[in-house]
Image (cartoon, rainbow, N blue to C red; front, side, top):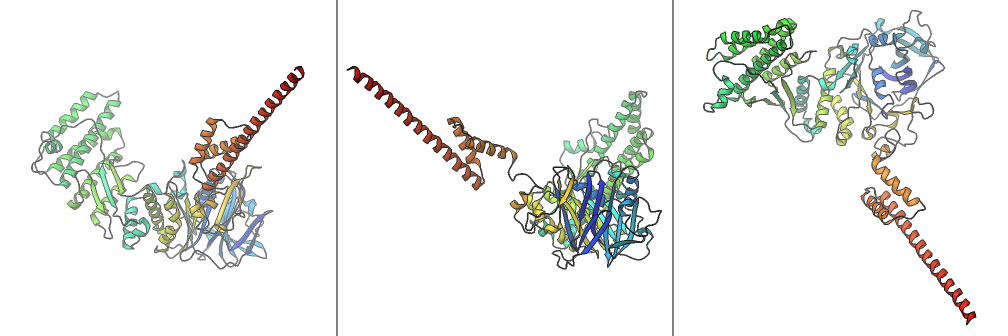
Length: 612
């Protein structure tokens, strides 16, 4: 199944907009009729599993993200939205031969389709046939029993607007239409294990150097960050931490230091949390309750060699005290989460520990216990509440911001492709909303190549269509211009329109400066401040007024800073002409003044000669 065309009569800021996603067909929608012509195109620059890439470009506010949202919306969300919004649009897919699927909102847009049942809802998804330049209804997609190739959407981005969490597209259950599954993935909240698996997989396939170009060893670093101001009096005198700080003889190993210091810090933190709860409650006696818990802690026995049992008995007591002021089930989870974290940490080899963090290099061989620790942490932090109280920072180092963006992006794609309902997929449409944001230009230049290489090595037996919004000319230079949807705001109507890049011969392997100069990127290829200063110099040189010495100094200074040779040399020429012009004017004026002076002297001589 192939995404071919979308028509939007109204969706957010988009109106009367036609979008083509396949070069195999020429599709138009006019006067409530959909017309299709087969282009009989055989050549495709994209091969193997990635068989299509579409880029949507345009300035901010032209609706690029809105198109991604529309394509990535599940049927449940379409139905709910059409109850409150007057949106109307349809999306057309080609199944094979003359069979198509059409889904959308607004029955009146498709009234030209023959035999549509009277009970068709405003939000629909149906199979149709195109014969004799007319569509005819075959069946609703969700009722169709014949096995068409399943199509899935993965909508991946680093930021979703407020309210997106309420969408059904964040649920991992399949869409009830049966053939369209859509799932939203936030690349900034991707599980740690997915990133770990990705980097390990790159090592196994020897792709780590191809992507990161350095052959560097990436490590996972887990560091407790527990802050508190109030200390709890623990046994024995001075506690493990103070005892260790006071005497460095018989120093314990790093693993022991890490585990015991982490537990003690968490006890202080939990105790301080309880004190804050009772101090904020004006109906309670802070002094009385504080004394009670202090006395109960002192009653807990301590035995050498059973330090962890002692610590967790105290933690159990503190959590029981907090329980009446919070949801008891949640409090129990806080206790269980920290205890399990410590228990799993104890299973790690000592080589992974420093005094204050756990460090594990990622290689082509997985350490089962370390992976188990990552899974444990994930299990308790990926909730509305972080049941490990946000006490851990987990980082993949060393990575630049560009490398981190790539790790997040590729692990998000990998996470989506591992979803169970994608296993039977024959086509996956990956929606990427400005994934190159915050990337160095070199990373942006390599993005398409890395995506193609990565997807071609996946185990899924399917094809991929990437739809990517961008501001980067590097991405466009990897695509034929027929694969680019350009959005601009019409100056007369203020409507967003899509237009063909007729003024560019081709974008594929095109010069970056040529692409940058097009209006869908920017009005000028230099910074606005520099442009203002250059325009000021041009206006001054074109004026009829002479330039003062101060202005000459300023103009020559600005010209000397200009990096573009053509602009710099042209301004130099204008500047010299200006000075030559006024130099000649000055000499002419001086000569005229002298002539006038000579004429005056001659008149005086003539008059005096008569008198003589």
